[in-house]
Image (cartoon, rainbow, N blue to C red):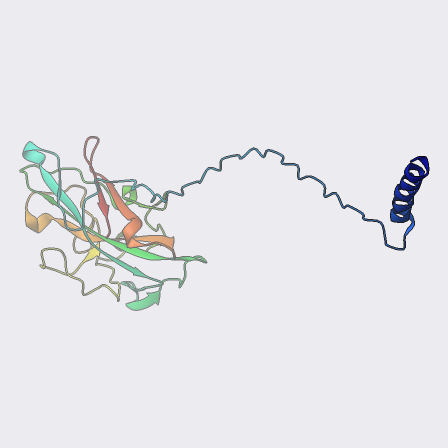
Length: 239
């Protein structure tokens, strides 16, 4: 029995040794690295909403062209209005001293042009009343204020001649608001410059005032500002 047991043990050892020293390549196991999950903090994004707003109207209650503004009351009750405008790069005016037309400077300044505003005032009371001269009637545009062109030739400069209207070729056939006559410089009546506004439609003052304004001026954003007295102020939008 002993020889047989020794032989069995030998066979077992031989079989085990052959499994390790044979020509077959050893089995290699590849261990894949484990995936590590890192928690990520998600920061919520805020979507900005763009709101487009228009520029607020500086004079939301401005009157429209030809709309009448009452000023004064009782015996000096009166009315005023802005009823027309005209824009151009230049104009031609008649000098009543030599009876020749002269051209106003084209493009009075780089980037500027001429604006004519037509104004009418009438005293509907019974007593003469002071009226605002052209020099205090302002034009507002794009946050800026413009005053009448002081270089414009006026009838009262001809002190040694009989006062006559200074005609401007481009607008000389524009009629006054009531259609009775042709327009002239505001504050003048047939070339004369009255100090007061007298009662009656025939004494109404109706004419144009000239301004030098930027080329960019748009009637939709332009206002005429007339201080009639300490209490009454009218503002008109051109369009």
